[in-house]
Structure formats: structure tokens, C-alpha cells
Image (cartoon, rainbow over all chains, first blue to last red; front, side):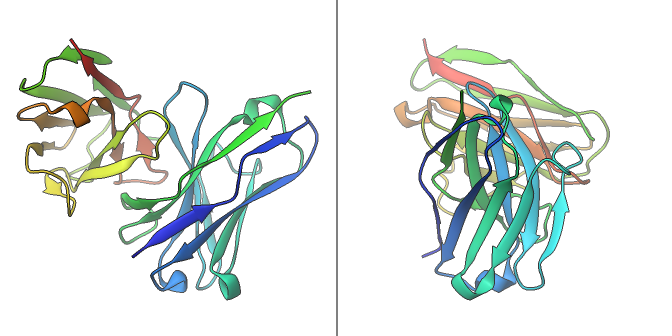
Length: 120
Length: 107
């Protein structure tokens, strides 16, 4: 069974750094892209970026390029989303998800979400 | 980026009703469209891909149609577990973009 399990909720202050994780199991982690989707409170879904753990090829939506860093450690089947300096506007639920095939294809497996709260 | 719009933004319906949601792309996307269902506090769930292909395990009361710029999601007979928010997403050009969502609630 394919599973994506995300790290727990985080409460941070503006300016702090953060790295959240998404561990894949039940499939060949290096053979599928894995992406991140943001959902701000009460709002819709935003596609942030995606990584291919097999070779670390990474694509970012222009809206998120330079704002976050996506990485992966294939030795432990885990993808990461990180910020170097959080802002209050980064407060959101973040989902990792695996596309059906190519990097821009529909997302058929999702993690449970990680709630990030940034507040002074 | 390709902009996606959905109508209506919300719809109130009763169990057993037929519900249709429309999604429009700002430019042609062939059949590269997916539909998701999201319930409160839960991750989205893929329902339809390639405009009309039903994802494995999704009930047959859900169907999708359309191509080019105009698409529809139809729920043929609304069930209690279908009250949720529905999003379309284009997968034709980078970056993939989502519609703003349509909330289906109980009349």
C-alpha cells in the first residue's frame, strides 16, 4: 500500500527556519516524483514544486521559486520542504503528494498534511 | 500560468440530486484536467484524471467530461459522503494550477 506520512505540526516565529518531511512507503521511492501543495487557511490549493528522488531533478512553480527549497534523501525515502526565513504569510497546511506519472500529472497519493503556523 | 475558474463557487443540494460543476481554463488544455474532492480537515482525493477517466476506487456516480477549455464534473445522485469541496486542476502546462474550488453543501 502506497503511503506518504508527513511530519507533525509546527509553530514557529517569523525569521526562523523550518524543514518538514514526507516519508514514502509501499512503492519505489526513486521511481516517482513527489511534490508539495500549499493550502492557506480557508483557501484553495496551490502547487508549489516537485522533486524526482531518483536524480534530485527539481521543478518549482514561479510563485514559489526562491521562497522554499525542496529536497529528498532517497536512502530513507523522504522528501523535504524547507524555509530559511519564515513569514507570517507562510502559515498554511502543506501536503506532499505523488503524481500518477510525470511531474505535472494529477496527484493520486497524498500525505495527511503538515500544519505550519508562523506567529510572533 | 493557466488560470482556472469554477462555477458555481458553492451549491446547496439534497441527497439524490444531480450536481454539475463547471471548470474553465484560460487557454486550451486538451483533456489534461483532473478533479479532486476535499473534505474538511482531510487531504484532497483524486476523482477524475484526463478529463473523464475515473480514478480506481471512485464510485461510478462521479463522471467528468469536456476538452479544450470547458469541463464538467457531474455527481449523478448525491450521497451524504459527497458533501465536500471540489477542485479542478490543469495538467497541460507548467506549473499545474488549481481552480478556486466549489463547495457542495446540504440544502
